[in-house]
Image 1 (cartoon, rainbow, N blue to C red):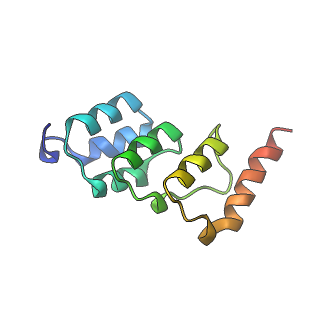
Image 2 (cartoon, rainbow, N blue to C red; image 1 turned 135 degrees about the vertical axis):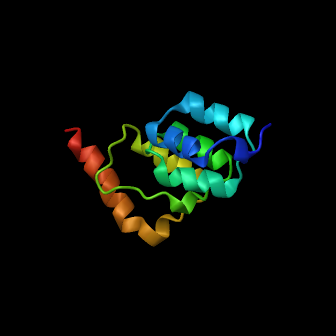
Length: 109
């Protein structure tokens, strides 16, 4: 396993932002990124549940994820379950979460 000095933190952030799951998996598996690195990459991540799960598995702080008012992802329930699994603090932002989910539900009709 290589140290993070061998791989630029920007590569990790870029893979997270682009949703490049193969590259993100490879970077996380082959380099010694720590929880702070995963959290920094989560700031750049799209809301793809697979990307988020990879970052959370590598120690990203679940409460740094900012759920948008009008989600642009296809699996809001999957994402909400994933965040709950890792202890997301829904109480601090609960009204916005409910509004966000209702926007997705009603937009399909």
